[in-house]
Length: 208
Ligand code: AMP
Image (tube, rainbow, N blue to C red; front, side):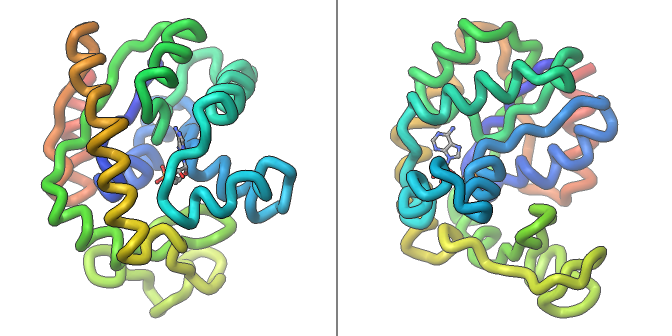
């Protein structure tokens, strides 16, 4: 199963992908996580993209496309993958079409006001990428990861100003992909405003 998860930041794509990767036995490839791990490890790519991520802007297509091309060529992707956060622009979608066929593009639908609420309360475990929310999905111990006990962080791009910018970028550059993939007959729309367990059920039904 080769899938793309599309939808605004904060729609829950990463949370649902964590369950879907186990269920379908395919890797979860989040371009955001790949960039963040490069930043953490202070690689050349990480240094190049750090300020772009902090501002909520998009990394140039050429850089992002090459990173994904290399990742999906790895052996664990031979039976499929979940792409989360890629493509985000029409040129990225065109490049992906040259790399591989897709089975489904899932559009996680959620009102933009809900996104702001979700993102501003989101907290993350920096090493595993595990995601929490101060109100909707709190950790067992305040501020600590459930498994490792590490301090949770707020992503710099989950601060209010960056959230607004990310939403503008989504509306201008990524939302047009819904029509792009609808025209190809690949879009599956699901309601992402309900609880994660319900969203996951909707996902499974829509992919039957
Ligand atoms: P995410 O974790 O998907 O919200 O991505 C975090 C940030 O990584 C985005 O705000 C962008 O700065 C960058 N990023 C992730 N995926 C892409 C992409 N497909 N194209 C360009 N930039 C990206």
